[in-house]
Structure formats: C-alpha cells, structure tokens
Length: 231
Image 1: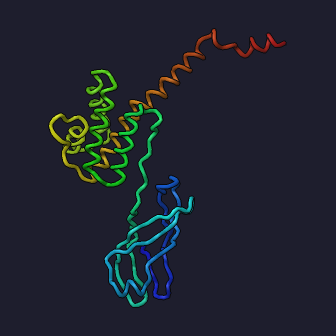
Image 2: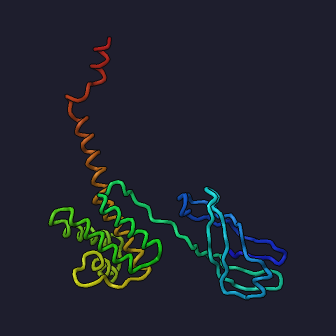
C-alpha cells in the first residue's frame, strides 16, 4: 500500500508499518516524526526521499528512505517499501563463547549488519580459524560435515554451497567474492555453526549433568519416604 505526502501538509499511510527495532529489539510500529514537504518535493522532483520515524516501543529515531512513485498536483505518492538506513544488529548468545572468539564473531556479525559482504566473508573465515585453533585436530572435518548438513537441509544450490564452504574453510588465498544472496545464507550457517559448537554443547552438558545427578537414588529422597520420616 502506498504512502502519500499531501499538498495540505498531511502525511498518509494506507496501513501501519512495523519493523524490528535495532535499539530495543522489539517488533514495533514506526510512527512518523519528520517527512518532506509537498512544496519541496514538487520543486526538486527527487527520485528518493528521506523520512524520520520513531519506534513505538522505545521512542528511538528510525531513519528510512523511500522511492518517489509520482508527483501530482495534490499529493506525492511514495513507494511502500521503506529502506532502513540503520539495520537491526544480528543477535547471538555471546556469553557462551571464549573471549577471543567472541570478539571476532561480534565484528563478523557487525560486518553483515553494515552490508559489507566481502568484509563479512573475510571475517567469517578468520573467526572459524580462530575457533578451530582452540579445539582438537579433527574439528575442521566435523565442522565441514556440519556445514554440509545445514546446506543440504536448507536445499541450497551446489554453486552457493561450494562458495560457502570455500569462504569458511578455503586454504588458497582470499575468500571468494560474495553478494547479498550468498551473505544471507552465510550468516545463518555461521550462527548455526557457532550455536551448535558452543551454546548447544554447553546447555546439553549442563542438562545431562543435572539429569544424572537426580537419576542417582543416593542423591534423591523419595517423597513417600520423606513423609514417613516427618510423621
């Protein structure tokens, strides 16, 4: 649905716009704060315009860009697709990572957020290598198998699969050049890889330790026996 800037100074949205906020993380409505004037748009005839909204959840400003569809005598029509200037940061449970790996993975995800795709690819390889140096010698093979399984489950085409594997585990020169499509796959693969290695492993070990503790009869007093002893 289109967005309109009217000659009388009004601003119309056919339906509310809600996005994930890069500041508070809430999926909240964008409320208009500052929009271009009709007179200025009619005079300059721009192809794109900038607008300022605020997050309904936390009140922080949200800066967006919209394409101008048409400029009429009574109103200007803007395209409904709003391009955010400030993208939401990628989230991860960093507390489970070793300090050296945490720093690199944070910067890696920041590169993706910034849309610097090839810097992102280079940081992915560096982060994977840093993590592998802290694990046993067979870890590289296991990680390759994990990545292959993820890509197969997601039904990723062979070309993209080869590119992702080369980015993460290649030994010859710099990582291959990638674009937005490959980056979108790579970010999910990397997050899943580090989640399985660190977050899932730590949580699973803790859960198993707790289960085994309570499974031992010597560590648990049956409820009925406890009641008899208190009687």
